[in-house]
Image (cartoon, rainbow, N blue to C red; front, side):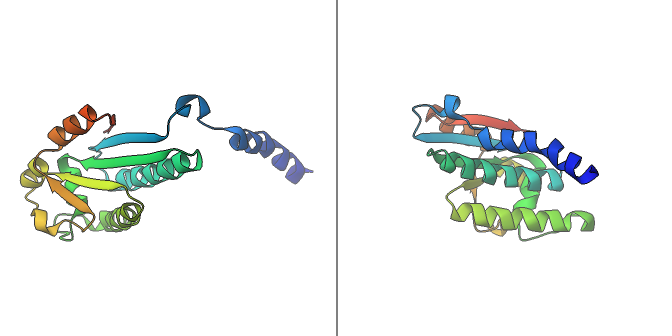
Length: 158
């Protein structure tokens, strides 16, 4: 009896999940261009964010919209993108490794990743130590400005 009630309680959410879509927002859209500006500072939160960006890419494709996604890291988050893990606390190592693994997978799907040169300099990170899918840019703000002018929607995450 208790198990049946528990299953019945879950049914409305399962039914709702199957009917959710973004039809109204995506009507007439064939390509969605967005740029995420990331300055979160917590590796576990960045890890989750990267997973949600991947989910967003898959959901756009499932709804027949081609995603054009760029992720720009500014501030201390650039330290999570380097092969050199100095300064990363032991307790954050797993999250940083997962961030880098997710980025590698999403880059293969066409999502582009950038690291702000101002932040790299400020965090004393050598651009040559960035993981392969991440491209250093001189200034993350300038990159965002340029892509917004090219029609990319800005999604700032801090």
